[in-house]
Length: 164
Image (cartoon, rainbow, N blue to C red):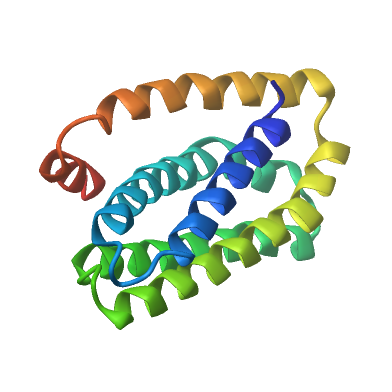
Protein backbone atom coordinates (compact mmCIF):
# COMPACT_ATOMS: atom_id res chain seq x y z
CA UNK A 1 0.00 0.00 0.00
CA UNK A 2 1.32 3.43 -0.77
CA UNK A 3 1.90 5.96 1.99
CA UNK A 4 -1.05 8.17 1.12
CA UNK A 5 -3.52 5.27 1.00
CA UNK A 6 -2.06 3.97 4.27
CA UNK A 7 -2.53 7.31 6.02
CA UNK A 8 -6.02 7.85 4.54
CA UNK A 9 -7.11 4.46 5.89
CA UNK A 10 -5.92 5.50 9.34
CA UNK A 11 -7.67 8.86 8.96
CA UNK A 12 -10.97 7.13 8.15
CA UNK A 13 -10.65 4.81 11.15
CA UNK A 14 -9.90 7.76 13.45
CA UNK A 15 -12.87 9.76 12.15
CA UNK A 16 -15.13 6.76 12.83
CA UNK A 17 -13.78 6.32 16.36
CA UNK A 18 -14.14 10.02 17.15
CA UNK A 19 -17.67 10.08 15.72
CA UNK A 20 -18.57 7.13 17.95
CA UNK A 21 -17.08 8.81 21.01
CA UNK A 22 -18.90 12.10 20.39
CA UNK A 23 -22.25 10.30 20.31
CA UNK A 24 -21.76 8.84 23.80
CA UNK A 25 -23.30 10.44 26.87
CA UNK A 26 -22.05 11.00 30.38
CA UNK A 27 -23.92 7.79 31.32
CA UNK A 28 -21.82 5.65 28.95
CA UNK A 29 -18.68 5.72 31.08
CA UNK A 30 -17.48 2.23 30.12
CA UNK A 31 -17.98 2.88 26.40
CA UNK A 32 -16.28 6.26 26.68
CA UNK A 33 -13.27 4.70 28.41
CA UNK A 34 -12.97 1.93 25.81
CA UNK A 35 -13.25 4.30 22.86
CA UNK A 36 -10.85 6.80 24.39
CA UNK A 37 -8.33 4.03 24.98
CA UNK A 38 -8.48 3.01 21.29
CA UNK A 39 -8.30 6.62 20.11
CA UNK A 40 -5.44 7.40 22.45
CA UNK A 41 -3.26 4.54 21.23
CA UNK A 42 -4.16 4.78 17.54
CA UNK A 43 -3.85 8.55 17.31
CA UNK A 44 -0.49 8.64 19.08
CA UNK A 45 0.81 5.85 16.84
CA UNK A 46 -0.48 7.62 13.74
CA UNK A 47 1.14 10.92 14.71
CA UNK A 48 4.39 9.15 15.46
CA UNK A 49 4.40 7.44 12.05
CA UNK A 50 3.80 10.73 10.29
CA UNK A 51 6.45 12.55 12.30
CA UNK A 52 9.10 9.84 11.99
CA UNK A 53 8.58 8.83 8.37
CA UNK A 54 6.15 10.78 6.20
CA UNK A 55 6.68 14.39 7.33
CA UNK A 56 10.51 14.40 7.13
CA UNK A 57 10.37 12.95 3.62
CA UNK A 58 7.76 15.51 2.62
CA UNK A 59 9.77 18.41 4.11
CA UNK A 60 12.95 17.27 2.34
CA UNK A 61 11.16 16.92 -1.01
CA UNK A 62 9.38 20.29 -1.11
CA UNK A 63 11.18 23.38 -2.27
CA UNK A 64 8.68 26.18 -1.80
CA UNK A 65 8.38 27.91 1.59
CA UNK A 66 4.61 27.69 1.32
CA UNK A 67 4.82 23.89 1.13
CA UNK A 68 7.37 23.60 3.95
CA UNK A 69 4.91 25.58 6.08
CA UNK A 70 2.49 22.63 5.81
CA UNK A 71 5.08 20.43 7.54
CA UNK A 72 5.50 22.80 10.48
CA UNK A 73 1.76 23.42 10.82
CA UNK A 74 1.03 19.68 10.81
CA UNK A 75 3.62 19.07 13.53
CA UNK A 76 2.13 21.87 15.65
CA UNK A 77 -1.37 20.42 15.25
CA UNK A 78 -0.01 17.10 16.51
CA UNK A 79 1.40 18.90 19.54
CA UNK A 80 -2.01 20.42 20.29
CA UNK A 81 -3.76 17.06 19.79
CA UNK A 82 -1.37 15.44 22.29
CA UNK A 83 -2.33 18.11 24.82
CA UNK A 84 -6.05 17.50 24.35
CA UNK A 85 -5.49 13.73 24.59
CA UNK A 86 -3.60 14.24 27.84
CA UNK A 87 -6.47 16.32 29.22
CA UNK A 88 -8.99 13.70 28.12
CA UNK A 89 -7.09 10.87 29.81
CA UNK A 90 -7.30 12.73 33.10
CA UNK A 91 -10.92 13.90 32.69
CA UNK A 92 -13.86 12.14 34.31
CA UNK A 93 -15.72 10.29 31.52
CA UNK A 94 -18.98 10.94 33.38
CA UNK A 95 -18.52 14.71 33.21
CA UNK A 96 -19.83 17.27 30.77
CA UNK A 97 -16.27 18.58 30.46
CA UNK A 98 -15.22 15.24 28.98
CA UNK A 99 -17.78 15.65 26.18
CA UNK A 100 -16.50 19.16 25.48
CA UNK A 101 -12.90 17.95 25.27
CA UNK A 102 -13.95 15.12 22.93
CA UNK A 103 -15.62 17.63 20.61
CA UNK A 104 -12.49 19.80 20.57
CA UNK A 105 -10.32 16.78 19.75
CA UNK A 106 -12.70 15.69 17.00
CA UNK A 107 -12.73 19.17 15.40
CA UNK A 108 -8.96 19.45 15.65
CA UNK A 109 -8.31 16.02 14.14
CA UNK A 110 -10.86 16.49 11.36
CA UNK A 111 -9.35 19.88 10.47
CA UNK A 112 -5.87 18.33 10.44
CA UNK A 113 -7.01 15.42 8.27
CA UNK A 114 -8.70 17.79 5.82
CA UNK A 115 -5.51 19.86 5.45
CA UNK A 116 -3.34 16.79 4.94
CA UNK A 117 -5.67 15.23 2.40
CA UNK A 118 -6.49 18.42 0.47
CA UNK A 119 -3.09 20.17 0.60
CA UNK A 120 -0.20 17.95 1.67
CA UNK A 121 -1.15 14.68 -0.04
CA UNK A 122 -1.70 16.17 -3.53
CA UNK A 123 1.74 17.80 -3.32
CA UNK A 124 3.26 14.49 -2.15
CA UNK A 125 1.64 12.69 -5.11
CA UNK A 126 3.42 15.11 -7.45
CA UNK A 127 6.76 14.94 -5.64
CA UNK A 128 7.13 11.21 -5.13
CA UNK A 129 7.05 8.40 -7.66
CA UNK A 130 4.62 5.52 -7.19
CA UNK A 131 7.55 3.34 -6.05
CA UNK A 132 8.69 5.94 -3.52
CA UNK A 133 5.15 6.23 -2.11
CA UNK A 134 4.95 2.45 -1.88
CA UNK A 135 8.31 2.31 -0.10
CA UNK A 136 7.13 4.95 2.39
CA UNK A 137 3.93 2.97 2.94
CA UNK A 138 5.95 -0.18 3.61
CA UNK A 139 8.17 1.67 6.10
CA UNK A 140 5.10 3.02 7.90
CA UNK A 141 3.39 -0.39 7.99
CA UNK A 142 6.53 -1.99 9.42
CA UNK A 143 6.89 0.76 12.02
CA UNK A 144 3.16 0.51 12.81
CA UNK A 145 3.57 -3.18 13.70
CA UNK A 146 6.49 -2.35 15.99
CA UNK A 147 4.55 0.45 17.67
CA UNK A 148 1.46 -1.74 18.08
CA UNK A 149 3.57 -4.35 19.85
CA UNK A 150 4.95 -1.65 22.14
CA UNK A 151 1.56 -0.10 22.84
CA UNK A 152 -0.14 -3.39 23.69
CA UNK A 153 0.96 -3.16 27.32
CA UNK A 154 -1.21 -2.03 30.21
CA UNK A 155 -2.11 1.67 30.50
CA UNK A 156 0.74 2.57 32.83
CA UNK A 157 3.26 1.12 30.39
CA UNK A 158 1.59 2.95 27.51
CA UNK A 159 1.74 6.22 29.45
CA UNK A 160 5.39 5.64 30.36
CA UNK A 161 6.22 4.80 26.73
CA UNK A 162 4.62 8.01 25.48
CA UNK A 163 6.96 10.13 27.60
CA UNK A 164 10.09 8.49 26.24
